[in-house]
Amino acid sequence: MSREWEANRSGNRGERRWGAGEPRHSEQSGPRQPRGREVEGNRERDRGRARARRDDGDQERPRGGTRRADGDREYTLSHERLDVYQAAIELVATSARIIDDLPRGSSFVSDQLRRAALSVPLNIAEGGGKPTDGDRKRFLAIARGSAMECGAILDAGFALQVIERDLHQRAKALVVRLVAMLSKMCR
Image (cartoon, rainbow, N blue to C red; front, side):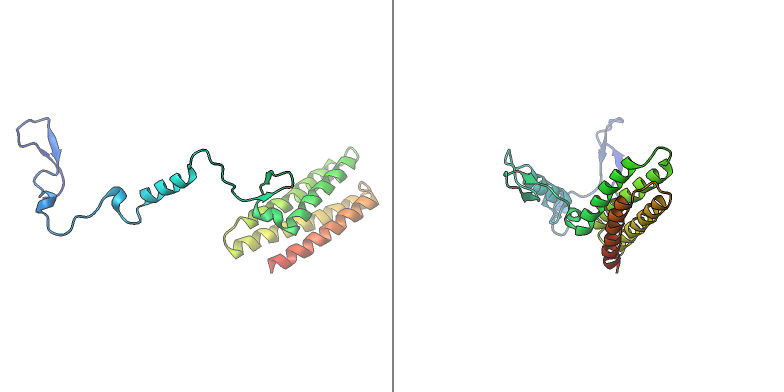
């Protein structure tokens, strides 16, 4: 008989029991299958072990990062160690200086430059977190396109005479360096 609810044999209408009429384990043939925490490879058991490793009292274990000279731990993500990411952050800072120096009424240039410059390190970081090479290269290609957009915005701002020559040259050199690094990484 399949497992189902049946009326209790005592005759009480309200009482029911599970699996009435099925043979007990001792009457079944074959070895008893372990349940719950006894099963090999059981997820619940594995989670419990992982939890126990995480919760080992008040001991503070170092998790990643590097030691600074003052003894404090500096936490870094994998993309933060890339030269291309550091150059992209430098582009964001340089763009912020350019935006601060722009005259009133040139918000069209400042908005576009701010978005394009910020897009470069964000896409590098997102690409660094992707598990497959194809995904990683796709985000690096997007970052490369944003860097090229920054170059075009800088040229347009210089042509419109809202960006000074020295700031334009410094930022443009950084953009050229970024595009070269990202182009090699996209191959």
